[in-house]
Length: 273
Image (tube, rainbow, N blue to C red; front, top):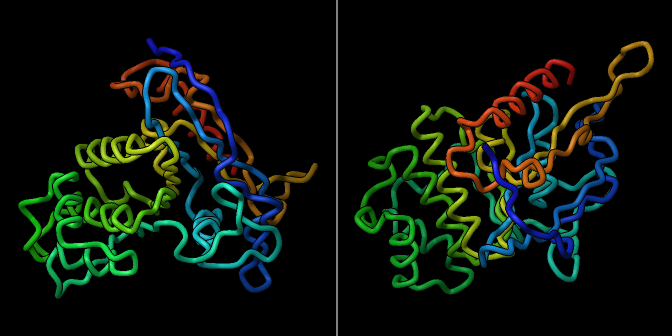
């Protein structure tokens, strides 16, 4: 059984206005208009937002990820973040890539210090961040000595040390076994609770984990014309408010019938995208 947790959506934190993007002659994204609002829970201080961008491989999620991060400019439209709303540029949001790239010839703590150099992060601040992610005993380890889950924690810690409250994660569940996927979901939920304005956007094709950890889902797909032919350019074809469905912020939600029903619904929709 799920429970509705009282909350309200307030000011806009991220807005996508008329985003279209091409790769050569191919229209990849078309007229993406959507926003993320600040979610304020009535029972908890400091609940951030977790939005999952969900869609099958090859649909345009990576292109949207890079546009959201300010790494690529859209063909038209703009991405606005923060208060006041300003156009996103590279470096304004934290980016955690799929492989969690680290400097292999530097220790874990040195990797954090390199990332935090532009904000003047100290060694004490880096050690405190490692402790927050239960990695204090790995400060002097080499990246090759870390598990996949530990590398993920280091990659997120780097971005938080830089002061980022907006965090983009590319396929954070890829290649993980079921236990590690659960740990990754727990980590994302933990990071989201660090501050009310923390906003995590996950780009993934893993339906179950997206439903388990998010408060909102954006389903990316392509429309079809009356004859059934695919219209070029993906857009957000569905938005799922998991808070209103009683699925957000629920321990053990993956064992409930409403969770399974939504997963099946999304699996069926994947086949049409």
